[in-house]
Length: 287
Picture 1 (tube, rainbow, N blue to C red):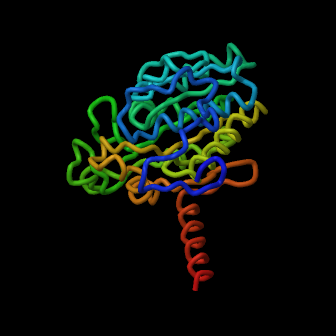
Picture 2 (cartoon, helix red, strand yellow):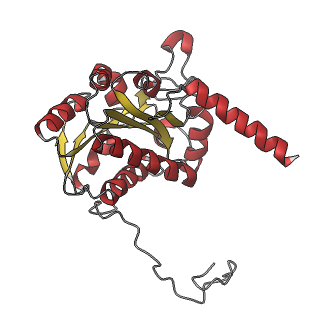
């Protein structure tokens, strides 16, 4: 469709010149170029987070603590104050930043290898203490930057460079559902798991990030948002198949939704049960 609502032919060159209808680059993203692999979901997650920070009016009062991973490349493009942490230690650094500057919005940006493998104790104790910070996890089940090998969140059957036949529970163990570990802790005020594999997922994830930051602003305790992201390179799938692979392989293990808010605390099993019930109800309506 053109800007005037007309259907444009696709079997011939366009008769109208292309023109920009809007500028969609987040204000806090200095430029849109990056050197991450084609099809990576991390740039989408980071853009979404920056939009929320800007919309909340905290552009000048935010401190981000960045872990070690592919996303670390964005430290030169995010227009907020940033601190680089050692592998896995971002929640502890964020704790210190918040205690020194309680008026600031403090977040960590970490991958599953950084948070769940290298720094599991850091995020667990930060949540248990109820530190007023927001930890954001980019979860693709792969150590993307350091070779593409398995992490503690890799799903059963998921392929990585050191699990070419897929993760085997009997040999490699089971994946850790980090949001499920953090949600029941007394210091956790908000915990959610979103995705960026489709437009609906991005919209819901943006709402989760907003609620997490608002929880921190209100001084209610620790908040956590896990975001499932695509990594077709690490998964050995064509770029275009990344979103479908995430939906088929990661989401059945790391179910998306709010695990804890002011009203309730649930588990991934509860979310999966709700999703199945919704699918069955939709199938009945379609008959």
